[in-house]
Length: 457
Image (cartoon, rainbow, N blue to C red; front, side):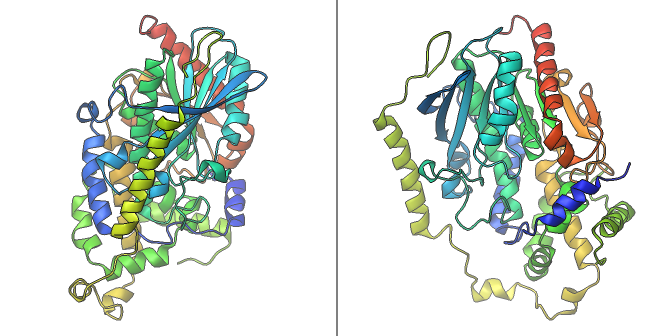
């Protein structure tokens, strides 16, 4: 199956580059890899987030068919892996869109955001409001770390030095994943406490992938509907159209100069599935195809009639003061500033004029390293299998140029029993015109859950 020309054309219109800052600090990568070993094991994570983790509602708005509640909480990742999140991302923000009248039960679907899906308008308009009309289903929309809000009065989760949706470092993607796993757990616990049932998770593109990660960590059966995502992010950045947006020049330079990536980081990579580092001819075939297409040279609790109470200003102020204190303390210690290199550390670096810097295989080595670190932190085979894979409905586009499926393990192999539904066309056309198929898959997964676990409320 070929790739969508619309996907390729759309990517050509975007001139921004990914990972302009490089791989990220080696010490951050080491901490992330160590934490991945914990968060990938559902049994080890049972006590990471308490069932009564505090969540605050600070605004409520009434619309014609629903109530919109805005809330926030402190990301648990800040406590578990201190200073790994940028200060702007510490406070997690969400919107909770609740129907004025429930049709049956009080179902809630948590929707995670895709790349570029800033604030809540797009998910609220294209998914949440139609879901209220069609199925009486509430939606909780969580804002991703490293994503900006459009209203300055609400603040940002995007670092000040980040351009739009383009993550500055490769490590930022892994930090985002760890944060969203924990933040989703906070929200699922909170919704359970408030009496909502059944609960499920979905997302489109990167949002679907992050929703999948979150469900691997939840200790109960739960509907999962990942749309336009697959089993690993490694192929996205090495063989998909987004690979052309990666700042390979900076990544190759850092990989060459700083030997810690090759001598230390690579030894921490544990994933060794049948598709691990499987680039070779498949990679070249994908890149050649891509070059031809691009024409580029090789190389308040709510129930019937009751609303959330807004939290008191004193409670909200305490949380804001905590976030401000963390930010000030971090800035004062210089943890967010670029690292300076001592003469000793510089001595361990390679000379840029050395023959190895110009070695012909450098680009291939960098791609293999990218695949290795991506598979380590994003491959679904590296995480626990969801409790009931029969509640998973995956939506895929047959000609998706953003999410290559060739050469990587399929979700059916990793999650036996899950269902995969295919749409004709590519990533962009499915995102623009197939939202109704996504919503129907959500309803089907929730119905399966209610039939299979009718007494789990």
